[in-house]
Image (cartoon, rainbow, N blue to C red):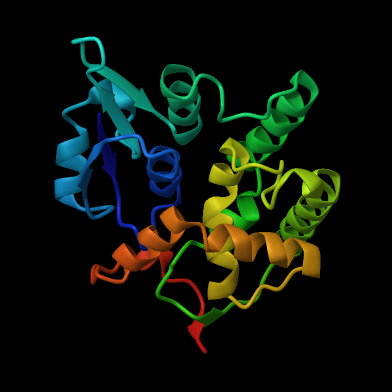
Amino acid sequence: MELLIGNKNYSTWSLRGWLMLKAWDIPFSEQQFVLDTDDFRAQLAKYPQAAGKVPLLIDNKDGDELLVWDSLAICEYINEQYLNGKGWPASAADRARARSVAAEMHSGFEAIRNELPMNLRARRKVVLSEAAHKNIARINQLWNDLREAYKAQGPYLFGEFSIVDVMFSPVVFRFPSYGITLDPIAEEYAETLRHHPAMQEWLELSKLETDIVNKDEAGEDI
């Protein structure tokens, strides 16, 4: 398999696709492009059916090239084809709850996306809107509730590492960049996910980058 991604410093959606493969030790190669450049657009234009966005997974598992785009679709594909369903919790009730939470992250929290772009090298201060504060409070509530419900099963949101953690991975990187603090239980979870070996590998690789994507340089330096 091959995964096309953007800058590790900035690209939240790329992180999700990459982490889904890396966390479960699934072999793949990657091509990385600088976001919002002519080269980025030219490379993605080779795959017009994939909407010109990253991540883009190219799989030749059965000898035919299969394209999977959108981070949640990539997670579902990997889960079905390579993990025998282990990417979601085992029980039907827990899977339903996990899918609801993952879908909420996938389609919601617009204010956080707009006002707190992922920027791993940054330490910034920003003035947040009421909508962003509500987004943060909702995430705080979700993480508190899920950790209380599943703490006996492991340290991640549903106990064992799952697709839900993959979907929230950019958020746990975003918050320290802007000094966002959470309740102790939620913050403990965020720290646990940040220290997952694959997350640490992504973080270290991001430090090698020097490209600047201006639209993701929000706030003022602390």
